[in-house]
Length: 400
Ligand code: NDP
Image (cartoon, rainbow, N blue to C red; front, side, top):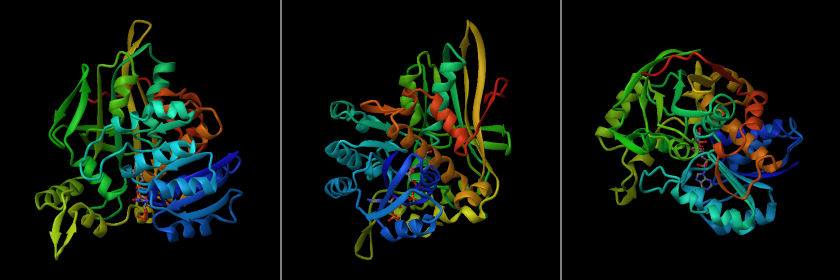
């Protein structure tokens, strides 16, 4: 039993908060703190009465370490679950260090003015967290998150050595809009318009954005085009999977999304460089975010399924083998349960599970850790229990 401070009250946070409230044996209390307090209050009002978890709310600017420290000292949580934006990771980690509180997030730090996706800034906190005796669990969403847990599980139970990992993220959902993103538009567009890359033979191989395309037949969804992207878990898995030769990440996109993205890029709307507009500085991508549908509003109108997982190839007892671990999630079932679409759901559930495992001591280990560095078994059990059951196949179709 313990208390969690949850920072952010957007699409992902809303699911994690619903799940903490379903899990009130562990989450005795939560404080929802975000920039816009009215959103926290609205969610508290919706949930109170249906849970034994005691809910409090607070306003906080998570860019400000002093404000965060004051809030942590006042609420005294056992863990801080960061579900704001990647820009806030370091300030929240600083506040956790100052107050000796465990830290969990779902996305690696990005400086707001440059689209750089690296763990180096957060890994620099390793010694400080170790000395303070507190745990930082990085990347407890789906990808990163469950994909790292799947990798650790495959290595522990099915392989002596994993040589190839293909992470496949398929969203077969249809929200009926010509263009909308299923998580924060600014973060999503930064990710998909960046150069692609994959890890091969000990080094990064860079590609042009969306240069590499493959088709895959996804169970529950059907055939989809998917594109190779850079993705943050490749960086940590390359270090933590002994014997690894190649790791790639593919995500599916529909033609309408790609056509709109191309047009928006061509006219400069996805740029993160500030421009002057009517006497004030604006960032084109932030302006675009303001006019796009809020991902949290897609829940009622999104139909179809997601299928996200990892295909592993490697050796067991000297023999070559392949293995696929994946989850299929239905947008409308998620909406019925927690009022959100499946992308928020597949991220919010693992965020709650990560916070639970750190809080109840199962995964407590001073230092800064990526998720695949922990024993995967309790997390795999919790996925089945809390709404993201996984499936396995020993004869999957391979990507090439
Ligand atoms: P949203 O934009 O829906 O929510 C972000 C929330 O953070 C909002 O409530 C926002 O407040 C709040 N926030 C932003 N800046 C601050 C600040 N300075 N101080 C306090 N609160 C702030 O995003 P999502 O829920 O879609 O995404 C949340 C996180 O999850 C992101 O980091 C994203 O990268 C990550 N993610 C991870 C995935 C994974 O599988 N690992 C998949 C999808 C997302 P306000 O309401 O005022 O704007």
